[in-house]
Amino acid sequence: MEFASYPSLRGRRIFVTGGASGIGASIVTHFAVQGARVVFIDIDDAAAAATIAAIRAGGHDVPHYIRCDLRDIAALRASIVQARALIGPIEVLVNNAARDDRHALDDVTPEYFDERMAVNFRHQFFAAQAVAPDMRAAKGGSIINLGSISWMLKNPGMPVYLSAKAAALGLTRALARDLGPHGIRSNSVVPGWIMTERQVSLWLTPASEAELMRQQCLKEKLYPPDIARMVLWLAADDSRLVTAQQFIVDGGWF
Image 1 (cartoon, rainbow, N blue to C red):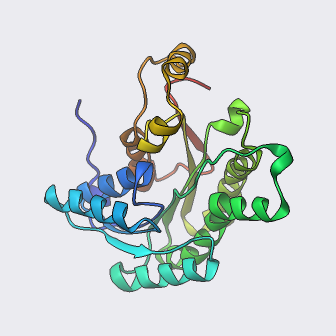
Image 2: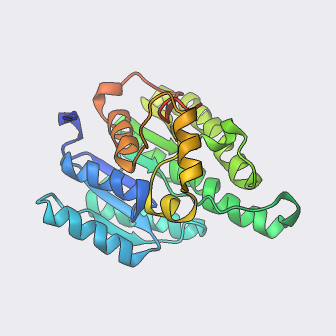
């Protein structure tokens, strides 16, 4: 297969959360291949180093990595200030970071609830708030929030995660309305079951794969590049009048 190149992404300044592994690493890599200038944050130094090494080996411009625990909003804000010093005003924000740990309804404490929302949703709001001045000054920009099909499917055993991912769609539409007059777009990419190393090692079994193939219209497993390519399109000028939308990439499962 051959996939699109986007001239408008060459030199574009990108900030990606959770970019060291999985979907995030694929997003960072795809932007680097397009010639974008990328900063990503994460807390997994080893995975970040591996991602950077792979991009360097491919002969592409190497992204900048900043270690940041985005549960700490002050640290998140500081990382965006640092990113701005490294590459200039942010033109594209990809709110990718999340973690779908399972949990039972009866076991959730207020402390656990707050921590899971901090991991899976709160940072999306404050990252958007932090980059909005750059985008207003530029009279344009693209904010891309990663959602999840899980809340649409009513998946059991992770009610706080589902709540956070449902909230991401509300934030996406709110940002689209409030920032649209400044030429800033806000959209959501909603992955189906993506075969990251974590997903395969923890939850993929012959039975679950067979059920997935039964449910999907397209009988192929999805992988991180399938999400990254949708993110590229939403970051590029090709989608210049697309905002307040969600794009489900799930092989026709939902």
